[in-house]
Length: 165
Length: 165
Image (cartoon, rainbow over all chains, first blue to last red; front, side, top):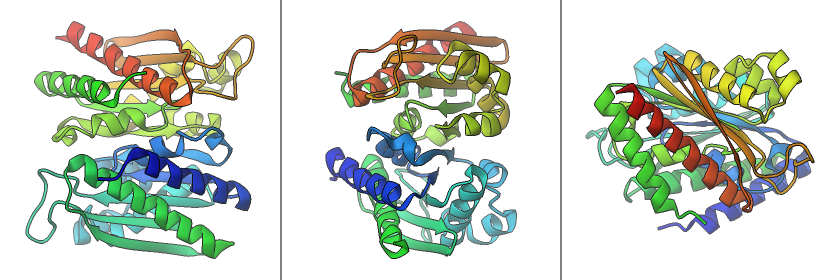
């Protein structure tokens, strides 16, 4: 169980790093459903670097709003490294920001399969120099899996910001 | 102070009402920053009716993603009944859903003015038959104001669903 204060503390570090670097940020959320944006906007002054985000539950919206290629969704599925990267790339373009982060996964309790079990999650980050993606398999309930995915997305972003500076 | 369990309970009632009515939903969030989407997706099965949403902090994104008219933003500002209604209309069109809900306000601590103090918030709902909008003035801190706005948006949605049936 992750407590919310710990998540907000990571969001605070993201804000400091983005503002120090003069970088703007957008989010693309599937399994986290808006939690990443909610955490970022808990911090006063978040409008100084956070442009906003897209919550895209359906494949149709991943295509339409984030320009995720239909071929990517067909070949690899919505929960895949390739789709996570395409979501991050797409929201960065659509929102016109320097940086972006994306999360796609199966929060549960339904939606799992043998190849893609409940808890499987990909988070991706994108900036002008490229993308990075990480795979996780969480073992919590729906709410815990969402929190773990949001924390992983924010940590990936922090690591990217450390390299960028 | 509103506790999170109470907010998730309202989201649960929204889900039951939407699924019973066969209606799909999209969200447009400014001051709540993703909290409404997060609450809706805490409930298992939310993908059965919730398409997703847009988190649009900046005026530019309210125009580009939600088709909020520039004239509306110029004449009334981002925190206004007119912009709340335009955001709800816009996200409903963009996401192709039956229903939508929008929130725009000043969560604080900064951003307030004499005419538009911290805590001022508008929530709007839209469906095929029209729109409805409500005005609030919250007195909490940033996090409490976000929670109060999300609760008000979900309650407005519930009232609209009661009328629709």
